[in-house]
Length: 110
Image 1 (cartoon, rainbow, N blue to C red):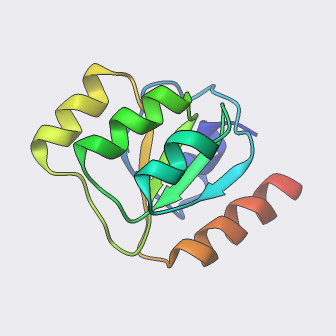
Image 2 (image 1 turned 90 degrees about the vertical axis):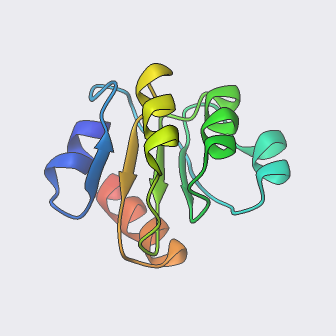
Image 3 (image 1 turned 180 degrees about the horizontal axis):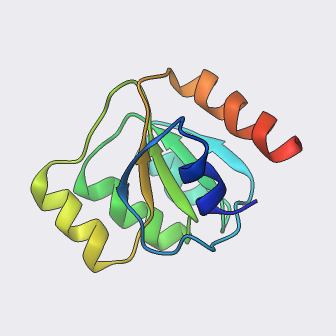
C-alpha cells in the first residue's frame, strides 16, 4: 500500500504530498516526540496530534513514510513550508489517533 492509496481513499485531507508512491510501513501512534524519535520505525505511518515543526524534524529523522495528523490537528504555515522543503508526506483527519491507526491497518490488510 502506498501514500497514494491513503490519499485516494477520501478519508484524509492531504496537507503535503511529497512522494505518493512511498510504501506504507508499520503504523506508529505516539504523541511524545522523544518516544517517537527513538522508536518510530523507518517507513512507518506516524499518527499523532502533534502538529508542529518538531514533529516534522522527528519524522525526517525516523524516515517516516507519512505523518497523519489526527483529531483535527493542522500544521501552521511555517511547519507546512518545512514539510514541503523536506519532502514529508503529511495527511490529516478529524478522527481520533487510535481510530485512525485502526483505519489505516484495515486499509492495509484489505
